[in-house]
Length: 321
Length: 302
Image (cartoon, rainbow over all chains, first blue to last red; front, side, top):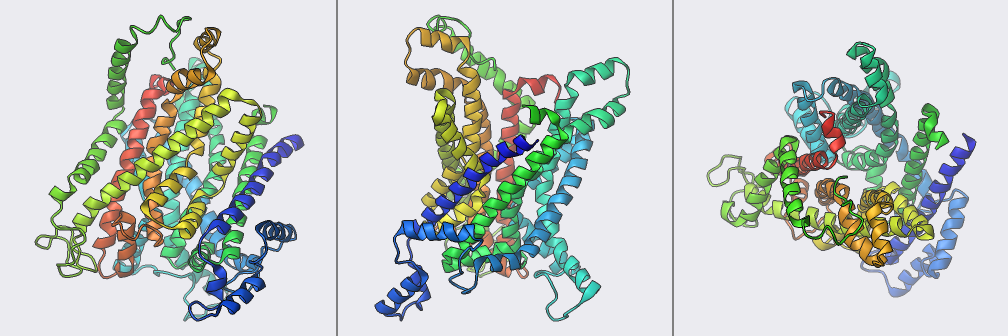
C-alpha cells in the first residue's frame, strides 16, 4: 500500500510543479501593467508608476520573480494581493468554507441520488423507466449551471417567493446560534440544488454503464446458471461491484464542481472563492489569481490522489497491478 | 475492432477495400439509427443547424436592430420571443447566435482532435522518454481545472472569438490524447503493422496511413462530447463578461439579460433553452456513435 501511495505521489508532484510554472509564465505574458493600475489609474506620473512597480517587485527579472514566488510558496506564503493589500492565503481561506459548503454538499448529494437513479436504470435497461431517466440525465448534463441557477431564482424566489434570491445570510437580521444555521441553510438550498442537479447525470451514467459491464461478467452467468434470482444477483453482486468506478468519478468530478460552483456563486452572490477569483480577474490582481488557481490545482490533485487511494483500498486488484 | 485489415501483405487488400468500406458504412449507419439516442440527437442537431444556416431567411428582424420597444413580451407582433433591454429581437439573436455556438464547438473540438491525435499517437508509437514526457504533460492538462486556465488566458490575452475558440481547443485535447495513445499501443503490435514494417514502410507512413486511420474512432466519439463542452465553455465565458463583445452569442444574451431577469425573463431564458438543445444533440450523437463503435455493449442488449 505504501509503495502504491508513493507511486501516485510521483505523478501528482510534477503536475503541481508544472502548473506553477505554466501559471506564472502565462500571467507574466499578459498585457496590461498592474503597476499602472495600482499607482492610481489615469493620473499617476511615470515616477509614481516606477515606484509602485519597485514596491510590488515587478521590476526584477522574471527568473528572480519566479524564484521569489516559489520560495514564498514553500514557506506557505502565497504573496500579497494587489487589491486588498493582504496575504492571499488568508483571503482565500476566508472564502473557502462557503465554497466547500456548496461543493461538498452538492457533490455528496449528487453521488447518492445519481448512484441510486443509475441503479434503477440499470436494473431494467431499455425499459420505459430507464429511457426516461437516461433522457433526463442527458438533458441535465446539457444544462449550463449558471442558467439553471437563474431559472431557479426565477421560479422559486421570484414567482413562488419560497427562498431568498442571493447571499449566504440575511444581513439585516443578524441571527446567532441555530437561527443563523437555519438562515444559512435556507440560503444554500437553491445554489446547492442547482449544483446537485447538474452533477447527478455524471453518477447516473457511470453507475448504469458500470452495472451493465458487471452483468456481462462470467460470474453473473454462473450465478444465473445456478438459478439464483435475478434480483439477488443484481443487489448482492453486480451492483456492489459496479459501485467501485463511482469512487474514481467522484474524485475527478471535484475539479468540475469547482468550476460550476464558481459560476453558481456568481449567480447567487454567494460569498465564496469563485467570486473572489472573478474579482481578481477583473482587477488584474495577479498574486490573488495565482494563489487561487494554484490552491485549486493542488486541491484537485489531492482529491484525485485520495480517491485513487480509497479505490485501491476497496479493490485489491488495483494495488497489485 | 473489426476495422483493422488482417492480410499479411498490405498490397493484397487494396482492391476490395472500397466496396467493403461502403457496405461497412451502411451497416454503421443502420446501427447508429437503431440506437435511438443517436437518431434523436441527429434530429435535434438538424433543428439547430438548419435555422443557423438559414438565419438571414428565418430571422424576423436584424439581430442588432434597436428599432422596437425594449422588453416586449413573447408573442408580440413581429417578435415571437419578445425583445431584450435594447429592443433587439430575441429570436433573431438566438438564430444568429447558433452560428457562433456551432462555430466555437467545431473549431475548438477540431483543434483538440488534431493536438490530441498528434500527442497521443506520437506518445504511443515511439514510446520511451518521449512517451513519459508527453503522458506527464497530458496528465497535467487533465488534472488542472481547465476552465480557470481559460478564464485567465482570455482575461489577460483578450477575448476575441478566435482566441476563445483556440484556447478552449488547446485545453481540451488531453482525453483525445489518452484515447489515441491507448489505441496506438494495441494497434502497433498487430500483425499487419509488423508486416508493413517488414516490408520497409517508413515509420511516419505507418503511423499516418495505417495506425491513425484504424484507431481514430474513439477520438471521433469523444469529439462530439468536446463540441458540446466547448459550446458550454464559451457560454460560461460570455456569462462572466469575458466573451467576444462584438458577437451576440447565447452566453452573452444570458449575461445581458440576467440583471433584469426578475422583470423580463425571456431575453435570458430562451437562449439557454437553445443551448440545452444544441448540447443535448451532441451528447446523444456521441452516444449513438459509441454504440456503433463498441460492438461489445451492443451484443449485451445495452
